[in-house]
Length: 391
Image 1: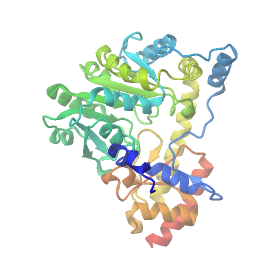
Image 2 (image 1 turned 45 degrees about the vertical axis):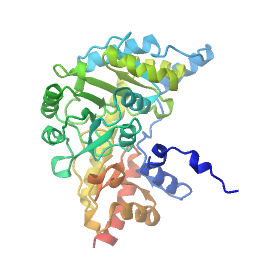
Image 3 (image 1 turned 60 degrees about the vertical axis):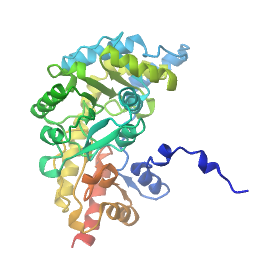
Image 4 (image 1 turned 90 degrees about the vertical axis):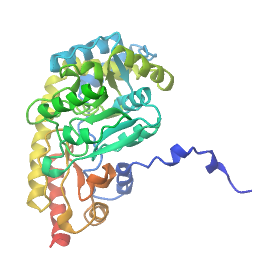
């Protein structure tokens, strides 16, 4: 009798595409002398004081569940942290949930606010998880194109064109993955005016908030009147080199937090207690280490952007995160062809831009959260590759 197990899979699950980032990560496994600019993960080991705090907590027997909201001390530290940086105040008792990474935060925030048929405006290119997180609760993604001529900055004028009676939310990623774009404060104020006019909610993913190289980050909730319209998402993975710890957070008005909590408490219960204790240490004593890492990323940023332009791959200047998003049109290859051939011929991993949306065509994402010597060697190899295909 034929196996009918495939009939058990829901249509929604069947329609979710696999991550294009993971595809190239898997393709590179086993390849010798590989240099990966593919996965967006810091090459730093978590600072020892953070690890030591977590290890000590385990030795003391802190291995139980916490409150669904997360440890109160961590929520208090997050409240102080966000007020110190951005002047926006969140009540640690009612307006903050600690999550298992920013990925869980995005998922449960979407499920808490989106009904089937609701439209969510989102940038293009955009992080690979955004479209699935919109569609899984039945939402309809409405892409807003961005381009290299504007440094991939999301524009209020383009958002306004796409607002309809079905629009429920705007999803912002600032700084942006995959482009490294940072939306300037005056543009954010224009977006805020649209939010107020049309009574929308903004899901503001600010996971890269501390990785800004020119000027200061603007927290969307800190803009006049925007705290009541904003779900702020953040985490510790990128700024503190804590990707494997899986600890993030959501800040929002208490009514929204209560809706999100209904989902969080059933699917996750709470973030791991030892990770939360590590996060407390990061907030209390991590500023100097973060500053050192950001300065190093900035050196790498300047190296990779200059190097890409020098070998004939036009690249705008990314203002945040740790990604460069060069054009590869000079080679005559599609971004998929470029990435696959570069991996096979030069053992360098990059991610095709179309993984992140239609506006990613003709581009690849290069993560520069890798050691500077590896970036320099990758540029040498890519230079040989571009010379071969670009003439």
